[in-house]
Image 1 (cartoon, one colour):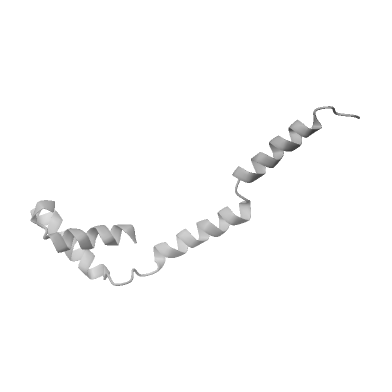
Image 2 (tube, rainbow, N blue to C red):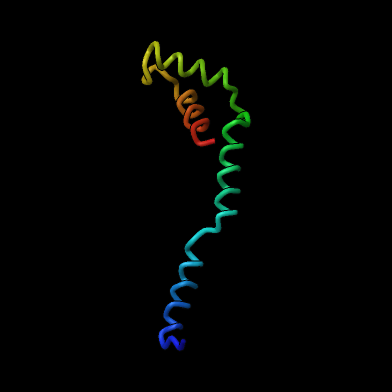
Length: 78
């Protein structure tokens, strides 16, 4: 079998290989994300976050100071 349009299939497979992540890389990223969930956050203690959340529960979000809001946002990003 001669396939006259073989170059079209080869080109499509090459492009697909560029945009499709390898399974090993995806697994590595998933493991890294899972690992970071269980590692303690640097610079922000869980007790401090719990205190801020308790304050929100009791008085509402508007009762937080600017520093407390910033701390909560930073903790959410980390």
